[in-house]
Length: 558
Image 1 (tube, rainbow, N blue to C red):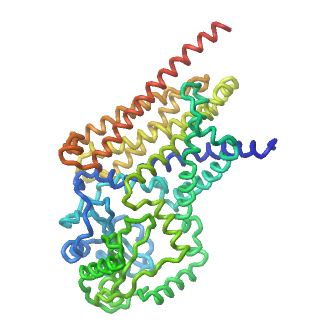
Image 2 (cartoon, rainbow, N blue to C red):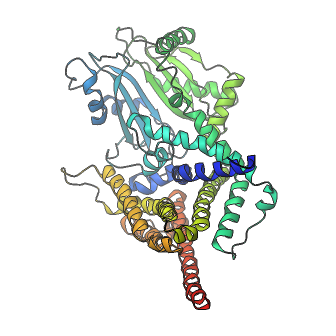
Image 3 (tube, helix red, strand yellow):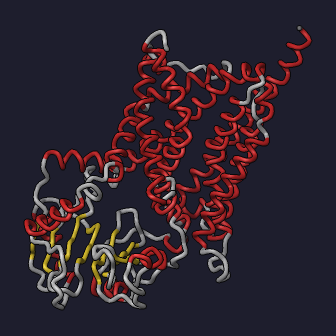
């Protein structure tokens, strides 16, 4: 089929990269935004614009909130068909309470799980969640969307398509294809070091696009390979669900044996028991961490089998001083405060796993390394985008002569994926600032409406890209590239202005007066986006003008 191995790798790189590049582009772009997901949350929810707080007192702040929590409507709807009979109006048997925070979270996320009477599967339950101000315990409105951590972040690994975990499978397959594309790309480009230093921006679009594709691909090759690989490792339980499908009985037996070995009860005893001072347990956990030379704050507080004699409290350290994602948990008997267990040192295999997971999820406190993650992700976007451009530029004149529409379709999809994705992200931020805090009861929830606007904007961008793609069928540039860059520049500026108008937090205030870098950083990134989009639109306009001038001159010469 192919004359040599290198040509077969070129075919593999081209077509696999094209087919899954649209998914990978979204993964890289929203993955880059997710590096600062908590900062985007603070920009999107003005009531959370205060400094990060440590885990508050359980007795004074958390317990009253937990006792008033109930399952969410979505959890109840999911469980309704999984019980024998109707669901109760109130759930009082608590399976778990939990509170989670990071060094970048001013607000505190709470979750609770409840036992469902008459459930067909006793292991299944219903869940509730709430976000509170840890200083007072006051809950934030449930319909406010955490755009960074609850929308952009899951979008990069699941496409926010949860049905039967299809989104996870699509992204997983794309990550696997990306590993193939990286290896085949290295095989294709034999002069890889020369190509790393070669970039000719003033050459023809096809040549400059290929130079930039090669340069960004080589420069960020370790980054791209590592993140594709560790993403597959993190979600291996979904891609290879052995423990929860083929070996379900063995999985259940393993959990029970593990509970016996660790001394942490697997099931409730059915005997009511009081809850000792959780604050005292937290203090003891901190003392033990300090004695080991790793003093720190609490990242996760979890209470299991609440109100039962088998109840226990787990206190996990926020490991922001290290890359490996470890919690160094200390577990206490809930009724007495007695220490049941301290997590032992990890095995070599476990240490590798936690290091790779921590390096991917970046919970550490290293700001410079975070920015390197962003640049690496954006280089992935540039690499994929220039790959699209090179594919179209190489074929559009041939397709124009043959009357084929392949280059036109690919170009329209590339516009949709590259600039259309940016427009969609800006649209959700604009909607966040324009929608009122309270909406009529017959309207969707505010957070849902923001998500609808995001997807609708992306669909509009795609329609525009296809409608304006007719010049590609004549061998010319799609004007949608330039027009959507102009739109992105304008929308980014509008977003910054809306933040100023609706909250009063302009850059002078957030940088100099009341220094608050999370909001200032988002605004500065939006201004940088506006400048890049403006520059790209101008250059695309100049190239389009040159191409139009060259067409008539060639025709006259002929």
